[in-house]
Structure formats: structure tokens, C-alpha cells
Image 1: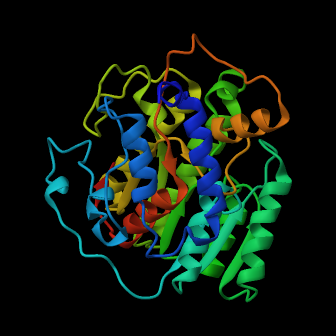
Image 2: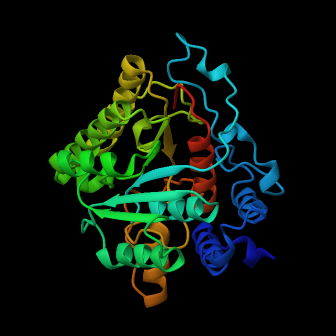
Length: 334
């Protein structure tokens, strides 16, 4: 028993990641229980009240509160008191960054429930492009009809491309997952982050209001919290002190989102993702790196003094939250 108690947190995280990957074929099943990851997380963090994964027995009990967050502008609005009934029925959804980890996972779930999806992705080489190609090929093999799944390869900052796309496809729902990711690389090359994240998001919001989009959901990031010392993060917490260009661009997008809501009444919801992991995950993220290096007998890279810790969010739970947000056109939410 004493030996078991000495099993490292790291080893258990690797075990969880491996087991979750093995059950990846069923992770979009509506009846998938999320109690497994919850139970393990509670065991790991039984004395840590910062765990961000809610305990639930099955999908049906996962509260709508996932996508009903307090507005960061709640002092001057009552948006956090609104309860928006979900939109039901057919949608054509534009998914930017649809070849990536989160984007392709959301696209698959939307297609599986009967919606049509338009993907736009520049297929940049931030990580191995073959992984993105595999994601697109997988979606195309499942949904070969162009009517169900349209794919555009290009930069969301390309005004002509995006205007032509909106003219041709007329999407009424936008799921904006495209972004240049990575905290450390943003310090080395901040300009590409400003281009992709701020310029690209501004263009999309401009087109969204001009083409009468019903709901605009975009990916923000937990990085906006910067060096916060809070035990519990809150949407109402002041996030005016980003510590990386990446975080600064995400904060800028949140400000732009409110501006477009204020000026044009665009329904817009921002989702601050906390590190996402799971099947077809990004190779630059810790879970993938840990499993890869351990399996090859290579020493794990360590940043900092080794005392930091963080929670991870399984991709199926992220997809669930994104889709719930798409279905509920709140005026303005973070």
C-alpha cells in the first residue's frame, strides 16, 4: 500500500491520457459517461479545491451552466440573468480552424447531429500539417457530400476569400476556433499572433454583422488570467495584465467582441478554454509530449522549478460546451 501511495501524479496523468485515448471511438456518443475522468481527477486532487472538472454521473446531468457564464460586463448588464432556450433544428455552421484539434472535433459533432459545416483553415505549419490533413480526410471519409461539408484552404485574414465564402455559403452560425496558439512562441514572434488572432477575428466579426449571423462563438483562452493568484478563476476577474503576446491577443478579441455586440447587437460568446487534451490532440501539448517521450525512453522537458500544476479538460467536454454555446445565442457572454 505504501508503494502505491508513492505513485506520482505524473504517472497517473499518463495513465488517464492513455485510457481516454483507447476509448476515443466512443467519445462523441451522447451517452458517454464523464464520471471516469471526474473520479480520477477527484482522487488526484482530493485535497485540491482548484479542480475545474464538475462531477456528474452522465451526459444528461451535465448542467447548462457550462455555457451560461457570468458576463464580464455584468455590472452594467443583466445578461448573466438571462436564460436562452437552445435553438433546435438545422444549422449551417462556419468552423474556422476546422482542420485543427478542437475545430475538427466540433465539426464532427455538428455533422453527426445533422448540421452542415463549412471549414476554413490556412493549414499552417505550427505543428505537423499531416495531422491536420488526416483530420480533414477523416471528416471527408465520413461525410463525402460537398453539401454537408465544404472545405476552404486559406487565411481568415484574406478579405476577398472570406467575403466570397460568406457570399457563397451564407453561414448563419459561426464557431471561430482558428488562432495562432502557443504562449512561448508568441514571445519570439508576436506579429504573427496579432495578424492571425486580432486581424482575423476582427474581419470575421465585421462579416458576421454584415451578413446577419445569428450567433458568433469564439475561442478565448485561460491565458488571459496571466499571473493571477486566485484559487478559483472567474469570468468577472480583472484580466488586464496579460503576460504574453498570445494572452494579449486573446484579451483584445474579448474587447472586440463586446464592441461588435454594442455597435451591431451581434450575439457573441467567448469561451476561455483550459488546456484541452484527448484523441487527435496537438503534439505540442504536455500530455502528448509526456506519452511520446516516456514511450521512447527520452527525458521529459521540464520548465520552471517543477512545483506548478494545472487541470486539463477532455476534448469531448469542450465540444459539448462549444455546441451548447452555439445553440444558445446570448447577447454577450464570456
